[in-house]
Image: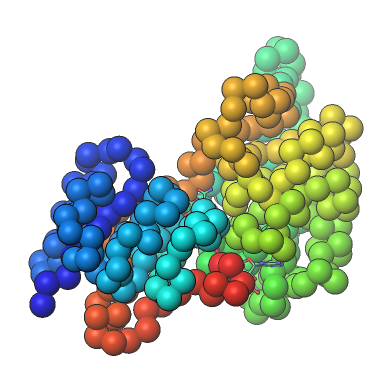
Length: 314
Ligand code: NDP
Ligand code: OXD
């Protein structure tokens, strides 16, 4: 039986679309792959593979059986007031996506652990001064969000010897991890996080979680790495904390408005490192395999893994 899959991503990148088409067909030759906006008759579309589609578009396919979201965070999708809520949403959990995020977290944690921003400033001034740094076991890292990505990053940091704390909704069992959970343990978690990494989903309960109060709860001179969503940060509070020296440095990959407007002060702040939402980019090679496995499960009448819980919003 024919299965029609519509790929719908705003990235106008022919090579990327060709890669997705090639991998999907290689994994399952019976799938007919279409690329938005060339949908053909909308009633023929069985599944949509989507990343940041136009709001309202997903309501156009009357026979849609599932949405495969080509990213981990579904906040954009849940903003869609016309989202067909009867249709299961399968978010992306993929080894390639996890590996990319873990690389990003390690890159920036090690940069702060080894005081690279200060060494770079010294180089600009022609200063030769050896700055000491603690052993990894004495460096406390805090990961907010101990889901798929937070856990992968935590495992690598623990294997490098860091003292890692993790904060999540429910307690976690992971060798070497100090687990904190729930609102009641947030302050204790923050108080020990010299380098804070945010890997939370953006939901009504996590919006604005990096704010004046939580930044003040971190040890003085802490570093903040936000690779989750811009909406987690209250921008003016972060700038004030940086200017006061409460926060020494921040790495920001995600922003409330993307692309970040040119006039935004983050662009020019001397103690902000900014990247354009590249912490982890969905690799078609690994992600397409995950999608086809999910599709096969659904076609066989089984439940696909990683269906989004609409009540929790992630
Ligand atoms: P998961 O759903 O696997 O994990 C989410 C974690 O956050 C869980 O541990 C969950 O707790 C915890 N959590 C959720 N709400 C709360 C809360 N109110 N209080 C405490 N903990 C909470 O997500 P992923 O790890 O797959 O992805 C995380 C996010 O990373 C994505 O939502 C996306 O926004 C971002 N991302 C960014 C990318 C980039 O390039 N910048 C790339 C990919 C993802 P519990 O375990 O108890 O449910
Ligand atoms: C994601 C992202 O959520 O890339 O996967 O931001």
